[in-house]
Image (spheres, rainbow over the protein chains, first blue to last red):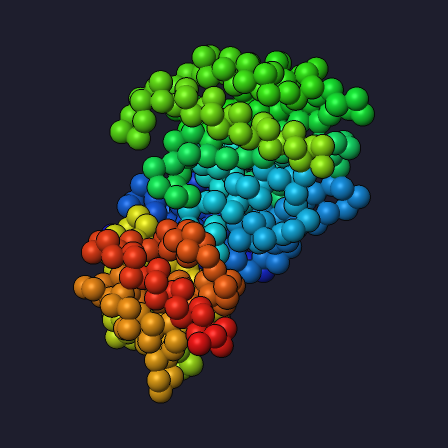
Length: 292
Length: 157
């Protein structure tokens, strides 16, 4: 398979040039190319037939991981490999490295980017779920010069759909400085090692000085609706001591309520089982990181 | 038509290419470097087309030739000098080739892997190989060769 005819290829060096390149095209004619590990599959199979490609590989300001006073910003063009090996990203941001270090395979992690993944928002993908669990914000710039920032909850609309408009470029994903005693984790189960998640679970928790859970976010990957929160587990974790019995109950409740489906990879009951067993493991690890 | 200027296995090339030409097809059909194989053809899951882009293992079927402009590429043809690399020698000794179709991609991926992790465990090697399918299913020999090559490259007997 190879792509349909492409009329124009641009390789801007700055965000301003990237947006200018986009504004020279008719709406919907051009697409931004990040790492291309999903988009190129779609272009080769001709599910996507862009007239123009704006390749972001040379835009240096879209790359890099910045920690300032605990607040984290990851440029949209930062690769999984760079996130996976950043030793500063434990604790509150542990879910991000958990997810990035198990995406696809080495070759994919050497090209694929956080921005590409959240903008593609594939129905079963690790990165959108890890970003949702940790409460990331998406920072967008538009061809008009306007910028806006959206919570992951408002950005991730459903499989292959986000709130990004055709005239917008995702600049970065950012997180406020986490409260003390915050930990997060992510894990998935797939048919082979590091495969797409049949089910993936991300958890972020904060404990107060007495050990009480005062913040809990749970997100799931692998459901037909795409990356989504798991409020049924969150309400039970909140106010608890993060003990094993509460964690069990929280993920039993989420598994019972989750809208799981059956397909060739797993049936609906098996997906419920995975939510429970992965949820237990991930929540335990998130609390361990919060206590560390 | 855009012009790409790139270095492949130490040689500079300057070629006009259509925008939609895949890097793997550029390497195979324009430069006649047919050691880079095409297996799955579009999903990007088989890893047979793995090359080094600026020293890192990537799949050349998930890139356009125009994207490689200004970059340095190494293919399987450029991996060895006058003698086989320790990794290639280990593959020969441990009978890791079998039909040989997946071998170039695996060598390109594992040579980058061993640079990053010179003393890998068997689990780490197996995880490193996830992006390369061997349909002879002879991973036992491949894992053994990678482990042996790592040992030799660390200067152990």
